[in-house]
Length: 231
Image (cartoon, rainbow, N blue to C red):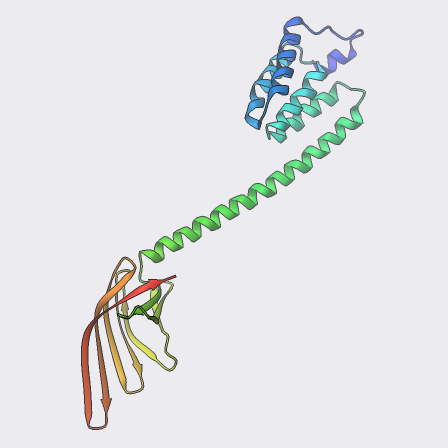
């Protein structure tokens, strides 16, 4: 229809109903305050073009509304149809096509960045939730006077847990762990400490046994102990 109309001399007249839709669309366009408001303008410009599909001004203004609504691919398509009507400002319109392509590339890059950020945030939240429901983390011994000291850390490596002691020179062995229980021994000097703990929320509690062996004597003590997880 656009090509045929361009060959007609004089150009076909725009029917009143198309003009009506066009004027209404222009009003909607001027009154729009945010991207979603341009929907009425877009619909009315399209109504005008259904009646007068050769009308260049309608294609141009449709592209403006589509761009304002963030529908950049459709805006570019409308502008290319406008160019088929061989307008006097064809060069300027072609430059707008190039600008829309650039804006689309920017929007795609921003969308990808936002998607990656959302995925990273979701992964971080999932890891945090997993850690909160596991024995992973740094575990602190809180004393009656309110002071505290980090006793050990629990890290996950694949499907198993690793206990990392805080005191240099301490060796850890016999680690048996689940999401809610922890058993291990630590050796420092002549002392061997055995931990049998169970997690309840951010607290690990249970029995701790310390055996210290010296020449000619052995000290063996068992007590209830709890540790709190700190970020």
